[in-house]
Length: 399
Image (cartoon, rainbow, N blue to C red; front, top):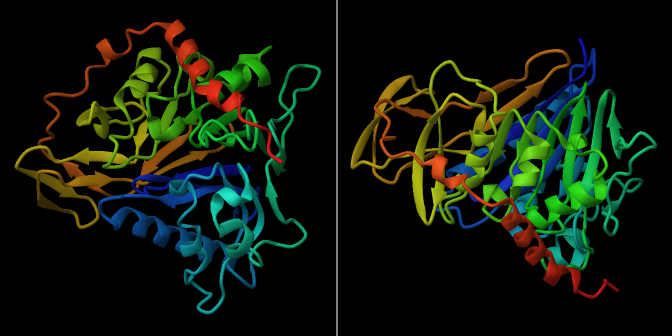
């Protein structure tokens, strides 16, 4: 059995969290990398509570299979100091795990973007004693990224058996930059040539930096099978150049019910690029926002938004896949899902979602019009990227 890697794109509501499960051949347990763990201003508490329950269950069962004395994850990587990416870490630290009723979580190594002071007490107090002393609590280096070799290929930052992990950007242009999003840690996992990119809240300016300064000689280095959209799929990310360079077969984004994330226009760019794989035999759904309004969309493409469907009519019938029965929901009810992306060498990737409520007579008579949305000017993206980075570039270097 070859090495495998699985990405659990957790539905945390307005926030972000991805659990990466890396299994080496002939082992019955995973190495766990948790990238972000936070949410903020989610109107309903169901999504973050469910995500936390999933994490405690997955970590507990995996740690038991590894015969660990405590619940354990190998890496915690916090992409940048926005609360919706880290403020659920204390809840995870205090959680009760299967097989470990009195023991609390241990972390092998911690990496984080920005400065420790930007996280309040999390880095300097809350996590002290929870991270292995030999590895430590490490800020990512200033303006760090994986280097390239003589053949213009990226050199892995970490390896897990056959899985390579690269850092495409971290703390750019500096760790002390006031714009927290632009300095996000951007990660790329690779197994057998199949790459998955996690972008944190990276902006167009971050994307431009990666394409120009990191892989400028060979942009195909970031051509990937799957991409998690920057900044929850907001319009401040996903430049035309980034879409063309990454050309993913599948896209993902965490969603909320606050700022209309994920936005429709970035998703449309990938649909128009004609790289997304036709994944589903029957209709799947995703909800996206534009100008403060939500749109329900049918698709059979590999589009995995955590925001699945919003009831737009006064009353709609849906099929509860968990209870296996029909249910009725009122206008404004929102359904989310957790997506799992599994990659095995020399096989087509698998894309699965947790049970949810599927619309019976879906209200998609007015889906978002992608045809009009993708008619843009590439030079506009360049200008927006420059505007994004100007304030950050003039920040003083950290002391």
